Length: 292
Image (cartoon, rainbow, N blue to C red; front, side, top):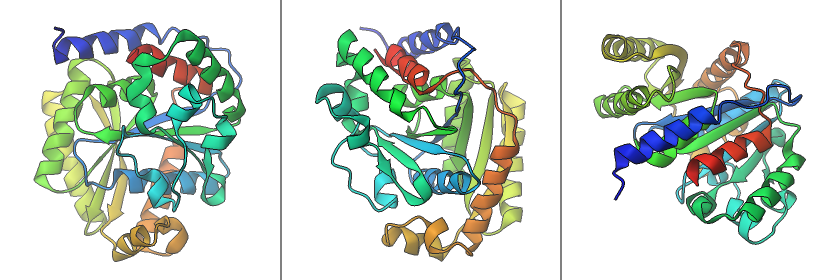
């Protein structure tokens, strides 16, 4: 039986092969994967609100909730979706029936259990799904919200993206788990760079101090280039917004954490992206090939 390390090596090798894509496509959204070393660090809250912040700045954003069976981006946006990727692939639902339009027009594609069933997809189902994705071509950013921790699915979605954002907190356990994830990414040569967001901070100074501590360890032991995007304040209004099932950028636009997320969004939009020439169909072709 193939061990976990060999499975990961095969997955990464598929990703390297699939990088030889056509560079001439006109629609080339930035593909960003957001992940974390452990759960409970506020990853999905970051994804939903950063998508809204970027959309507010005039770009069109699609969130792909790729947390298998545990995704909650829809809950944070105040929705309870009837369908997900599984229904598009296996039950012949249309993109329009499945994709949810959230605040300011941010689109959400729920992954649900459909991601775990990718190995069962036939060639005909794959082609049909890819064709249906043409409806989503008018997108500037695709933000993939993965599960937490070091596992095959997380590594696979990191392989599929151009940019990796890693969420951590000042807690030692969070930093240790974030380091473990980066160590795996480095070991399998999936990515040689990552952007860091420090959540649940007392203030900006704690965010910078946490990043610097993390940076020094990564610089010493790993061959991964880091970039600090900023911090997100520990804000009671964030907790209230979660309970109200409404993004804090909508409920409390003048809160400290809302200002933090807007600063991070400006940094993301100001960074030159590594344009791969992939449209939405190309991204999902890569996902299918890696996970099948």
